[in-house]
Structure formats: C-alpha cells, structure tokens
Length: 213
Image: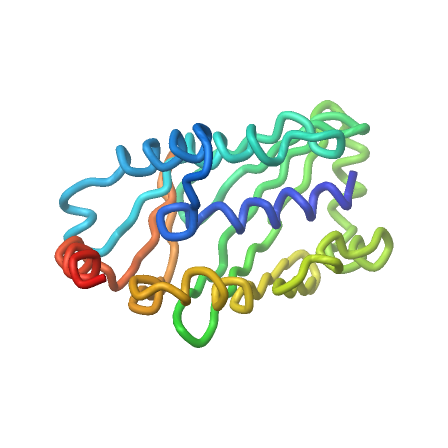
C-alpha cells in the first residue's frame, strides 16, 4: 500500500502538463483536451495562466491509473497549493494531503516537488497514526523505488518530500518542438477545483508561435 502511495503521487506529477504534452491518439485523449480547453478564460490566457481543471486530472486517473495496484484514484484540488489524493488499497481508502512546493519547467530544468502533509486510512485511526511516523524516503528504501526502471525520470525522496526531475523526458518531447522551446512555467498555484500554470506564453504569444510553426 505504501508503495502505491508513491506511484499515485508520481502519476499526479505527470498529468499537470496536458495542455502542452498530451498526444491526441484516442477518444479519451481528445475528451481530456476538450475538458482542459473549456477551463481556459480570456483573462487568464492574456496573463499566461493556463488552467488544468480537477475533472481533467480525474479523467486521466480513470483511464491510466485504475489498475490492480491502485483502485478508484481521485484528486481534489484545494487552495494554497494543496490537494487531496485518495485511492483504495488492501488496508482501505487511503487519503494523502499534499502540498506542491515547486514546479519548474524551462529549457534547462524541469522538476516538481511535492510534500505529503498528512496520511490517513479511512476508519483506521491507529494505522493513520503509524503512517505519520513513516517518511516517504524510508518507504522507498523498504519497498523499493517504483520509478527505478522508468527511463528519463529521476525521483528522489527526502523525508516526506518527493522530487521528480523529468527534464530528460521533456527534452525528447516538449523541447523538441518549436513551441515547446519557447514555453517556461515558473510556478503552479491551486484554487478549489483547479490548478493554474503560470507561464510566459500569453494568448498572443501562442498564436504567433503557432502561425510561425
């Protein structure tokens, strides 16, 4: 169950860039992109703020993360860069209260840092209490790093912090395109039900880049 916790966190980190990275290869991908696009506002795009709605991330969970190891995964986005990740495990319904500490994407570095504030198992206060004393780093040492065989991604654990360096991955995907080379994401903020990417790519810049490509 603890290993599954790490997997869900990592999956989350890789779905907050669907606007730039998603490849429309099937109906589910198309539906995901439509959900993301509908969440954008003219004012936000003028400021370079791209919105990833909670529904879009949960759509991704349903199509990619629901398997024999993680059942019924859901995400609830809160304010102040906090979120609640929940999923079913052999011990019951696990709930992780997390905070996005950093998210950087540019031409030289791309990484995300998430801190687990609280770990709960529904209806099992003693188990929840025990989890409080087990840092993610110790869990990774005990159960193994679920990302050790994933190429072009480097995950490091320190206490209850998970930092994922995915720059080698985007170098071969996003940064290989003309638009991808021009985009930087300086930070991420959250509000109830939505995640906001603060980028240098305003609506006029995006239109110009698309017309030039």
